[in-house]
Image 1 (cartoon, one colour):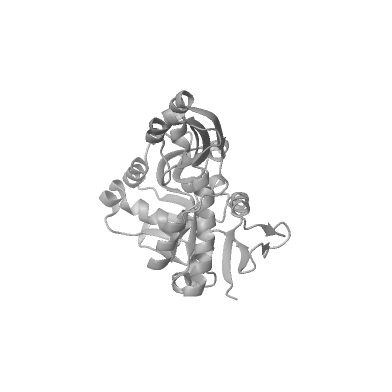
Image 2 (cartoon, rainbow, N blue to C red):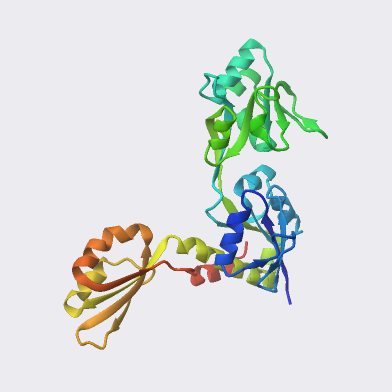
Length: 327
């Protein structure tokens, strides 16, 4: 029996990950007490890790699949298959400064510090993302050319521009200014934590959500890919179900064609005759966003409308095609 190793995140993504796995019928037992919970599928072996670690460990083959923020996939440049945007854990990666400062952009900050001969100290967990973004700004290029910002950790440093220093933060990044850093680059969900620490965001570098990722070799292995596609199908089903509504309606024969012409559906509505002559039942799945648009038509033409929120909508044909294509 093939076993797929699945790394799931601890921390800010933890609760939402347990929820989406449960709704995908991949229930975990013991996650409150151990980093190795038991999953309801015996062919899957789960371990809980920090999301920062997961992309590189999946890329290296220590795990076949994983869930992590796409921000950490980018930060680590992990060579993984990005299978699915899970659409939770949304954050913005922002440049934040003390609220008392009057700067409105990173360009203004870099220009002012460069013209006054001051060293700009930046604190962040996202060393690579920050260094790349800072070096790409107009003000940086005008003042420092192609020189790489100095990136500093307790174990190593790189870069030749000592006038802009980017320090590795080990957490609580928002507490660093003004004593330990001039500005920070950090993930922000609502902005409340920044506000509580007398900071404000002046620029958004990137946006991020949780992603299902896979090791390339595992995804190209015929046996493992089948199980990986099972997980992908179930999680995609949860994501898609949140965007759909399942509706049932009764309609008279005289209104049937007019109603069908106005109903969107995944393929085409299922139409079944009722025991009462001249009446039909319509069964279809529509976009949640479309429901209010077609409601007037349903009120006018249909009777006995029932609306359900589906638990899973599984895109079987699409996943089957993806399985044939590989990575």
